[in-house]
Length: 107
Image (cartoon, rainbow, N blue to C red; front, side):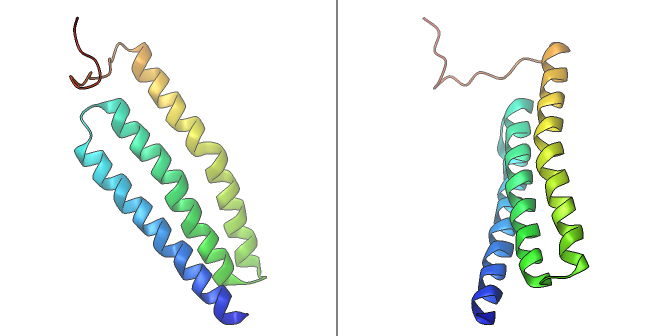
């Protein structure tokens, strides 16, 4: 059972790290603010969440796990709300999404 928990925790840590790297690539490659915001918001929640779950499994039933759980719940609540608030502020300030020709063709 210890080996299963060990491998499961490392799988979650690797998945979280991959999501974080993919989010960083998305921040560099996407064309406009809203696309970059989407990449950052999704991968932030999934990447950090997977990392924290992997660390909770590694920590076992200790006070460290309780603290990591509190950080995880805080992240799940604040990250999507902050992403939405920043996108709404950008929209209200007049920032428009960049339309790509393959999706929105002029008629």
